[in-house]
Length: 442
Image (cartoon, rainbow, N blue to C red):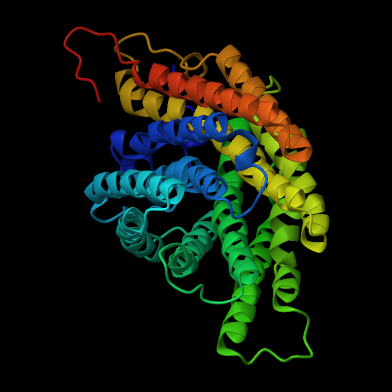
């Protein structure tokens, strides 16, 4: 068996130690399990109001715990391997991980118990985690010798993360006894828009341009489509930020639309790019796969997530125009656990086996029998994870729409089952090692 041909464009010699990305990856399903436990404990009260403490805790377990935890680990891997830039002081990843876990746990506890001191310590921990991640990562991406759309998307995503963190910390004043900085609806809308469309959408787009052709033989995106996507995301991040700044400075013309409405209109380029154009191009590329006609189970996650992105774009229109909180909650649920959650779940199911195969089995090629990449995580396990994830998503939508407490608690159980299955799958792959006398495990 030889090294897979599709690794030729990657600079695998610069890959960080296996423990660097996988420490984040194995923690992500734990955060999702905690989110399911919170839903099980609080039921419908966690799915009825945008501002309820348990809803905010649930949201951040999804965004910081499941999504950001995975994305941090992915960037530690992608920056050197795809962009060709080693991340300085990569050992700091241990501190980043510890601070992120501590900060998230403290934030959830502080929100649920309304304890100001705990919330303040948690926010400081999260801010320090992001800065320890951002500074080396930004330096690596700035110096990256590879110049392509994927690298540009990674830069845009990291920049959006910094801006979203800044706004989030500023808004957090309202949860620690200080005045809110301005219109709550405007600030929350811009913060979430930058986080979802710039940070998450930017990185998912950038990763898809690399991963879909590499792992699944999808037709690569054209340079023009990548440029359009990046331009739409950049505009959808910059323009709402400008509206927020003008409103904060008190110089927004009175003749202009209401600030939150104006910010929503300004975010449309990113909405169209991330939730309409990019999914269309990606799904078309998957449909025109050049090879490996056999369906990879992890591709189910991509197809479902990309399809849900379009549904999210459509639902976001009435969610903004109407005052029904169920619509905005449904959009958030679709974004975090549907579009992004499914794609992240699928990426973990594919990337973790690849990393383990590369670090532990590829050096043994020619000396001992080496398993194929596909056998490290059985397709049946990935299909089970997909079924659990999709079921929990649909039951959650029903719980939001109906307000039924038993559906909300059932959603919690299904989310916990999905997370437990993913955690078990990742551990199963990480436990596999070369079986040869005197071998040294990576």
